Length: 324
Image 1 (cartoon, rainbow, N blue to C red):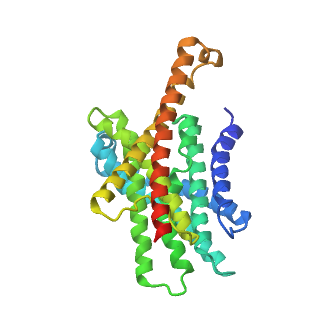
Image 2 (cartoon, rainbow, N blue to C red):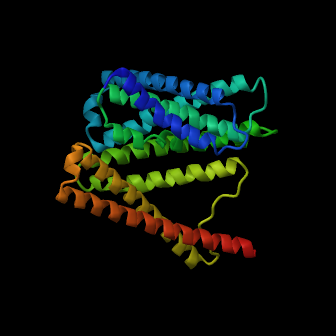
Image 3 (cartoon, one colour):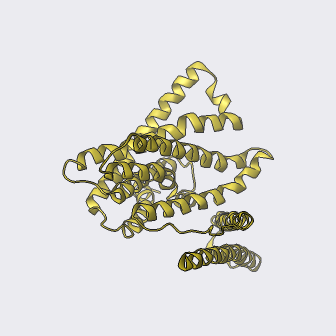
């Protein structure tokens, strides 16, 4: 694959995802501004890569850093103290610097800062995709599926930053909320990386990998909820009961939704990885074809069941809100 093809594969999926959210933002900023944030976010990815490389050099000069990272605890430590803080810090800087410039001309809405955060995070993703594919370090399918992940990490501090900037009275508690939200992003960024890597370690550590897709599904849900909040819309409620026992039951159903839906996506992802090396003619061989159909229907069935439970809880919440 030549450099132009790599570049297009790296850039087009994040831009499509950005367009998806741009269309859903009321009073969205001009597309040129979002493109600028996308480019700055990609540049921040190269800065983060350089900082991580510098940290690795310094750490290797002090301890046997490469050996430490071979253990699960060492890998988790690196994600918590190096990867998460560096990458989320660079994305935060990539959003704050343009905001300081744009604020000279007009007052930014909270929703504008929020979509700026998504744009910069997707630019960061595009840079990361290109680096991975240029060095042959990850399959194209895996990176395309992970397109929205950096945005899901960063929206908590993007939301807090938007509320702070749009507020007419900028209080210290609002500023401290940005730090708290940024630390939340760092923690969840590191946690996703740890869960995604747990498969390469022996049991029982490898079982943590089954938590990855349910956790990603929850992060996506959080992104959608923050998007509604930043536009002044009522969040979608799933827990509507008043009695403690009923609330525990509804929380259990929400957890069940995440487990079913997340692992349904995971099952389809594993299926796609299995059939991607096959030639098209091999897919239609009877044994392979029926295996593919069985896996598709099984995982779609789990996904539909999760969706039906979600609709059930949503209808309960709307009914209670209507009769209040």
